[in-house]
Image (cartoon, rainbow, N blue to C red):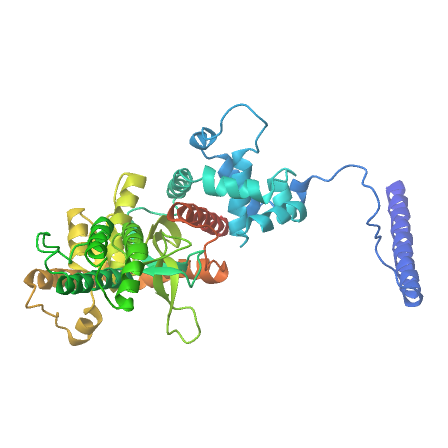
Amino acid sequence: RGCLKSEIAFFMQKRKAEAFLIVANFVICCVLTKSKVVFKDYNPKENLLFPPNLSELIDDKHPVKIVSNIIDGLDIKNLIKTYKPGGTSSYHPKMLLKVLIYGYLSNIYSSRKMEQALKENIHFMWLSAMSRPDHNTLNRFRSERLKGEVKAIFTQIVLLLEKEGLVSLETTFVDGTKIEANANRYTFVWGRAIKKHQVRIAEQLEELWNYAESVAKEELQNTENIDFKEIDSEKVTQTIDKINEVLKDKKIPSKVRQKLNYAKKNWANNLDKYKKQQAILQARNSYSKTDTDATFMRMKEDHMRNGQLKAAYNLQISTNKQFILHYSIHPNPTDTKTLESHLKGFEDRYHKVPKELVADAGYGSEENYNLLKNNKIKPYVKYNYFRKDQKSGQITTSQNNPKLAKIRERVFKLLNTKKGIKLRKQRCHDVEPVFAELKHNKNFKRFMLRGKTKVEVEIGILAIAHNLKKMTKAA
């Protein structure tokens, strides 16, 4: 017991000595810092003994690692099949896909800026394993290799989200927005202008024919009657040649002769041009000359909200819990006629249709209600007079279309059920924030690529990036 007391005393004296040294050092440091500023070591030219591991410099929950892990788990056999054996080695498609998706996730859409990021940004450098594909390689991969594969990749990710319980394919919220095309804003073709020019050529040709009959009636007696309502380049050429032939030796005004010469040089070619333009137009009313798949639509981007006509595409999306389940590109300026093809794309992708569909009044047409009924989908879709009917408590009837009145009555009751009210409120918190995220937060207001096929690839990459970013927040 005596030894134990002496050891305790010794230990206490030692602790007091250590405490005294700590206090003394602190006092000395305080005195020195008053007289001299002390900085941490800084020598950027100093060589490291071991090269750093880039993975250790990036947080495990960073979106770049989520992107890498998800893409590593995808099946890209069909994408690999697009490469031909032989020749020089190619960059791995998974690496290029990761770079593109993370680029869109980071609001970098230009292949040149991605090329720069691969040399400067630690996240891109880690993602590419220090590989440096140039902008041409990235752009070719985006516009050519992914052309028929991005939809399958997007579908795999959505099915993964469903498996994880993050989304449901049973209830979808549908809406559309217009995104400007990568096209010249001042070179366009209008359907009305084509018809106007065709009618004008037909009228002027008829005037020339009537004039020729008045001057040389005998020479034109045996000719067949010409229908000027339906003319083509061949008929115009034959008619002009016949008029020139009968008026060859006649004395006619110089204006008529000039008009005949102009008609011979231009009208047939113009009609061929109009025919090709109509083939491009199909059911549309306009298109851009620099991106013939883009239609001129009224945009609401200026601060006055009065609308501007620009070449654009109508993007339709289906969402659930603010994740994008399906996307499609349409040339229609309005949403009404897009639902059928959009729903068909959803069915092709997942081999089933949703049980419930929620949309605003822009989709509330008789054709769309019948479409949803035929596919056994509950239509939580407003119609044009729904807000008015809510205030009055009476359903707006249609004397000219009693079938539509019955549809409205059924939809009105469905929308005012407990679930209908819930879904109506949820719609504006589900699909519309996705557009806000894409167009405002991600500043994606204009496509980088041209043509509907390439635009679909770009939207596919953007939709994948959006879903992976949401997945990162949910993790």
